[in-house]
Image (spheres, rainbow, N blue to C red):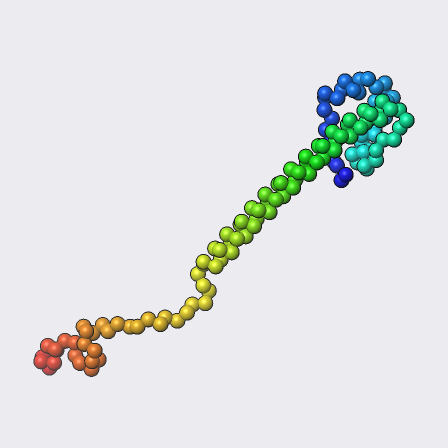
Length: 130
């Protein structure tokens, strides 16, 4: 088990702790902290204390598994979100304006009234007046 920073004690277990004398309850409490912080299980000849510890140990292990499952789901969701954003950013970059402009290869249209001869005068009256 990984080192945990926290653990839960359920109030419903108080009836089990009430069956222990103060010395046993103190040993149980210390043993729970040692188990959570260092992974050291309680080894004792006292069968009642060992049984009570095993109940709390199972609760702690279930809580740790649930926590790890939640962390994994959240990490997967975050990775999925960042992958989606990365793909969207790549799509945006590929559709943006190109930095290198290509030269215009357009055909210019004749603007002198349809006459293809550039030497001809588009205004025939201007010659008569000269």
